[in-house]
Length: 437
Image 1 (tube, helix red, strand yellow):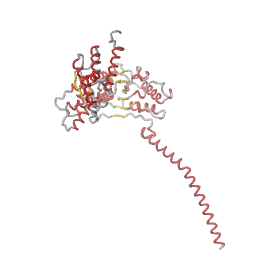
Image 2 (cartoon, rainbow, N blue to C red):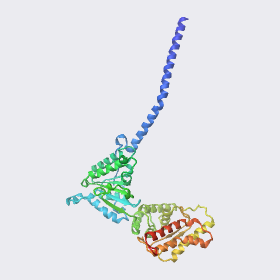
Image 3 (cartoon, rainbow, N blue to C red):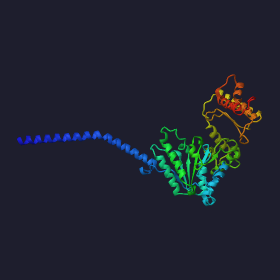
Image 4 (cartoon, rainbow, N blue to C red):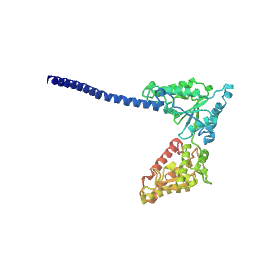
């Protein structure tokens, strides 16, 4: 019995010790497990950031410039239309890349950087690719926003790496799109001179001073905000040449349309000049979208080719928006809209010095309940007083016609009133067309 009691006592003591050690391990595990999970999650997120920024931690500061090969989708000057003056000004860049010795013999030097300035969609990127395609040289493309990250020093490192890649592939072109994202005026950031964006800009200025055009590396940048660029970026020796790319005129729009209709099946007899006259202010990108929309519309209608009707329908969609045939307008609203648009059309027909009337519709599109469209013979770059007065009367014609139809008026003329007020202010305050200056 004594032996059995001793064995039982030993077993109880062993069990108690085992329980105490087990409780200690469990307590330690539950104490440190949340911290381990947090560390693991942070490590995973950091690795993902490294990969998204440049394929791992070692390439985090590498340039994001993409080398575009010309084997596929090669672009030449034949694919660029409507900006003839810009093409002629940039052709000497192509000539230098083809035969740099011709310039070096006479001691001449090509501009280090070319800044293309123009509204969105005017063909700046397309023109840069055409230069590389004509010269048959490597083409690096990068956006200004790709330089700056949340980590200090990454942007400057990417600038250095970009120029290093350019030197390895010389002669080549480096295209920086939307350079205003990194080239803005210094001194306006939250961090002052130590702001990451300013460090990136400083490194870009240093690199452009440090390389020679004899190396065959030419920088081409594009922006639609040249007013916000730092003056140091525009001085001679950096981006010392500016090429302005304007919206195409009526002849340029027709050339652009002829380039893009090669990609679709066009019916015989389609007058592209009519579409060009009816699209004043359209950019090259908008004209390309017009052609694509017309092809999609023809496909939905089951046609074998795109006709003029589809192109005009696509033009109206690009300009005013999609038709809203399901809009539940009352008969009173439809009648009021018809009188409003008839007022515009009637005055346009009877008054001299107005553009020819093309189309009147009361089918709602976008925010508009109706529209009256004109078809000018060509683009106008100056305005005569008689033309301005006629446009002022036609603009208010819708509001006047509503008064003939009913003793009440609607708010449908709000846009016309804003437009007429702006035109009258320009005539008096800026153009000096009042009786007394």
